[in-house]
Amino acid sequence: MNRNTPASRVAFCGVITALSIVLGYVEYLIPFSVGIYGIKLGLANLSVLILLYLTDTKSAFLVHLARILLCGMLFGNGVSILYSLAGGLVSFLCMALLKQWNRLSVVGISICGGVAHNLAQLGAAILLVDELRIAFYLPVLLIAGTLAGFLVGLCSLSVIRAVKKQ
Image 1: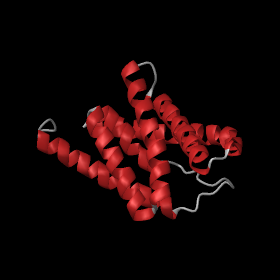
Image 2 (image 1 turned 60 degrees about the horizontal axis):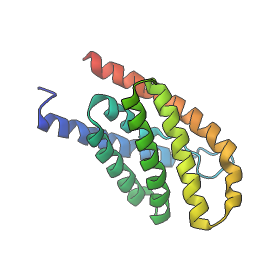
Image 3 (image 1 turned 120 degrees about the horizontal axis):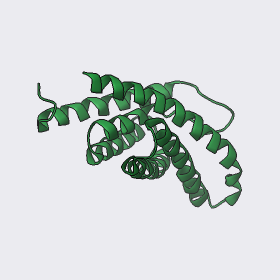
């Protein structure tokens, strides 16, 4: 099958969307807690990086948006969708721009995306609850975003390399 046909690209994006929803569910089931509410591994964000490198920005964005909305409806609530949209959209913008800049590796872009995600969610939390004292989470969120971004970046790099070999 030719990977460059519209049908194969749609099918590939559909498979990645389904995979990202499954990863979102797995992450929802894992009781990952370090004492700070909201810190997650970001497994579902593998799809963003993989699609940014294997398809185009538009496909990556649409799959990312679909994943955020579907996971929010399936495993979360209205507030979690707002936080996920804030973090996801800022993170995506950051990663897409950095990929075009072409100076960072997949892992570096993933780290920047993880940090941007946490900063955007913190900003959304400050706005939604109208409480600036929430900003004390910032150092922990920066560390968490860096570590999660590093792990997601390594996994994404492995998948990207494997797919490009075939």
